[in-house]
Every structure is written in structure tokens, then in C-alpha cells.
Figure 1: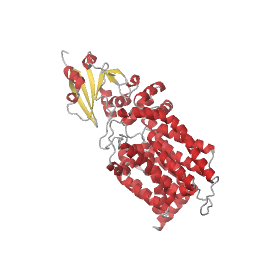
Figure 2: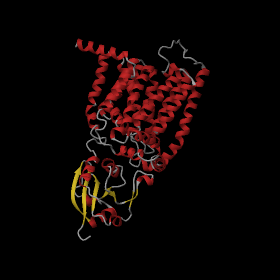
Figure 3: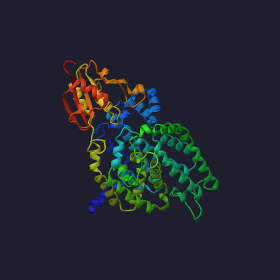
Figure 4: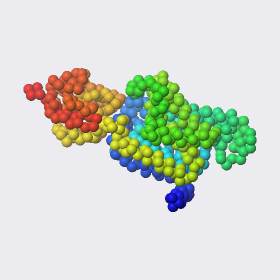
Amino acid sequence: MGGLSESTGTAWEHLRRLPVWVPPALLTLAVTVTGLGSAQLWRDELATWSAATRSPGDLARLAGTIDAATGPYYLLMHVWVAVFGDSTIALRAPAALAMTVTAGLLAVLGARLVDRRAGLLAGLLFAVLPSTSRYGQEARPYALATALAVLATLLLVTALRRPGWARWAGYAAAVAALGLTHLIALTLLAAHALVVLVTWWRGPAAAGIASPVAVTRPGHDTTPGDGSAGRDRRVWRWVVAVVPAALLVGPLLLKARAQQSRQLNWVGLARPDDLSALPGGVAQSSVVGGLLVGVAALGAARLGRRALLPVSAMLLPVLLLFAAGTVVPLWVPRYLVFVVPFACLLAGAALAAVPVPAALVVVVLTGLLGLPDQAALRRTHEWPRSAPVDYAGAAHVIGAGQRPGDAVVYSPRHSWLFLDLGIEYHLGDPPRDVLVTEDEVRRGDLWAAECPQPAQCLAGTSRVWLVVAGRRAEPLADVPGAKGDALRADFTVAQVWQRPGLTVALLTSRPGR
């Protein structure tokens, strides 16, 4: 046991010699790139692929129709894909890099607000969370928003401690980028506003952001420029700093609000029990989420007034989104993943109060408790994890049996499963989508328009590959409406293949048709 403690102490000494951000960043990078391409692109990532492979003009039309809130991210991914391609790993690499940056920034923020040990432990804890892997392996904007949330908070602390227009300009840029990346993440500004107001009212020490090495005496704070005039300047500079974000994000917010009925038609109103499920939702593990909240609470108690910033950054966005979600369908746990680093910062502060071996044991235990979820999310990003959708398997079936002149039909067409996008991504050159009258790119949408008279559009086709959502024993019988009537009238089922979440059937024309 003594040997273990000695080796742990030696390892800790090696870590202390490195810049505080290096170990968490390297660990996060190692974790997120492990199995980066293992899980198939899931439905939301297919939407990213579809958008990112369009021209800027087509992206503008898409933003005007349904997905304005994600438009800036899609434009960024368009540039990325143009350089690095659209493989699964290429699409997800920006998220892995963003989570790596988040871990490093979190360690620096923890060192600034508490001490080096707290920052280092916070970053290491963040690295092993299932949510860090989940959103660090997803071609969606949540990882980037998380990085920008921590960056903006770090720049706010820097600007409040050492006011200067250059520092406030950096903060303004980070906040604007945060809003353009993820509108919901701007709820973080409520926490920033609270800290700025407390700084104005009582000084940086009362807000918990005074430099740990500052020399103070009762009733005074020696932070430069901290007289009443200096505190007033902080408030006004913060207000000026958020103006660019308001100007940039305001029109985007109005457009997104008008699209809400289409974009979030699957979301219900928030209920009180949604709050109790949130830790497990954002951590991607109920056990790990509960442990993180418990340790974070201990850290908040230990920090006292120094906990103001991380506690408010963790709680206020949650409460604001929940309050809005009780009136408007907005409550989606993954929208709040950007608060997780602040919970880790509080947990790091708690772990910094115990001996190093014990603190590292908690970090390792957290990682071990999350291993089942880590393994599951590398199999599929669908939820529940026991219900994957095997787009690649269905595409392989079609590709292996496809002949010239074949057609493909999807049921349902207008669903969030994006059956057509999944087959197109994995097959590359799929059969002719015979019922399409206007594809999703020309429509400026995520879905194509289908022929109102399916029987006429199917005329002259002798073989149809039918792709149906779910496992169907009789897929042709399960196609509803005029599309189903036309298929059943003119085609019979030659063969059926069932893949997880999907059914593929080869239909051949009836004799004498």
C-alpha cells in the first residue's frame, strides 16, 4: 500500500511539472479518438452531413426553411468537409478537438478560480465522463458550444480581474461565437451577468474571482482599478461586450423561433421529474451523473463565495431552460451539456481538499462506473442504446443486389430517421429515388418532396428496393397511403432482409403489369 502511495505521489509530481492544461487535454483527446468512427452516423449527424455537403447558397435556403439555429455550424462544417472529407471520422473530428480544448480550458479556469490541483482534477474528471465521449464523437455543435462556454467564462474572469479593452474584445468574440454555435448556451450569460453585478456591488473578492495572490484587507480589494469608478467600468464594458452577440444572434433567434414548430415538433413541455433525470441525461450515465452532482455539491460548500461563478454557470442555464420549457417545447437535456464542465470544476475543488491518491481514485472510479455507457455509445448513438438503426447494413443489402434500372422507395419519407440520407451516405450511388419530384437541396429542406401520384411515378419500374423503418415481417403491407396502395397494386415481395431498426424488401413487378 505504501508503494502504491509512493508511486502515485511520484506520478503527481510529474503532472505538476507540466502546464495545468496538458494532462486533461491529452487524456480527453485519447478518450475521444478511441472508437471515434465505431458507431454509425445517427440521424442528427446525417442532417449535418446533408447540410455540410451543400453549397453556401443552398445552406442559406436551408436556414431560411427549417434549421436557422444550426446554420452557422453547418457553414463551418461545410468548410471542414471541403478540406478533410466526409468520412465518419472526419465529420466527428471537430467535436473531439473541441472537447480536448474544453478540458484544457477547464483546467486553466479551475486554477484561476481555486488552485492548480482543483483545475487539474476538474479537467481529468471531465475527460473520463461518458458525456465527453458522447458529444466529443458526434458531428453536432454541442462540443464546440461547450468549449466556447468555458472559454467565454475564462475570458470573463480575466477581464474582470485585469480590465482592458483587448480582454473585453476577446470575451465579446467568444460570446458571439457561442451564440452563433448554440443559441441555448447563451443562457450562460445569466451567470456572467450575476458575477458582473456582484463584482460591481461588492468587488471581485465578493464574486469569488479575485486573484488568489491579491493582498487584501477588510473592506478593500487591491485588484487594479477596483474603486467605484473601476467597478462601474466593468459593468459598462460587459454590457458593450455582449452587444455584438445580441446584434448577430438576434435575427437568428427570431428566425429560429419561427421555425420551432417544425424543428422541435417531437419535444414535449418540461415536467418537474425532468430535472431529476437531468444529471444522468447530460452525463450520459445515471450513476456517473449522480456521483458528479454529489461531489460538486461538496465542492460548492468548500468554496463558499468562490463558488458563485461555477454554481451559477451550472444552475442558471438549467433553471432558465426549464422555466421556458414549461411554456414552450424546448427541454432537451443535450442542449445543456455545456454546463457539465462547471460541475466538474466544483467537483475538482472538492477533490483538491483530499490527499492526491484519494482524489485520483475518485477520478478512476468515475471512469470505471462509466465504462458500460462508454462501450454502448461506441456501438450506437441512438437512444435507447438497445435500439440501433443499421443504415450501413441496409445499404450493404441494396448495394450487393442492385441492378441497373432499379429504384428505391422509403417509408416513411418525412421522418427524423432520415432513411434516404442514411442509405445515400453509406451507398454512395443508390438506386434512383423514383418518387422524388424535388430533392431536399433544391427545396432548401432536410426532406425531399414526393410524387403526389405514386402509381404514375412508379410506371415502367420493374424492381424496387423498399426501405421501411423498424423490423417488419410484411414491410409492403405496412406502407401507408397512396404510396402503399400503388406498391401493393403493381409489385410483390421477392425477398426481405431485416437489419437493426430497418427492414429492406426487394419488390418485383407483378406478371402482366
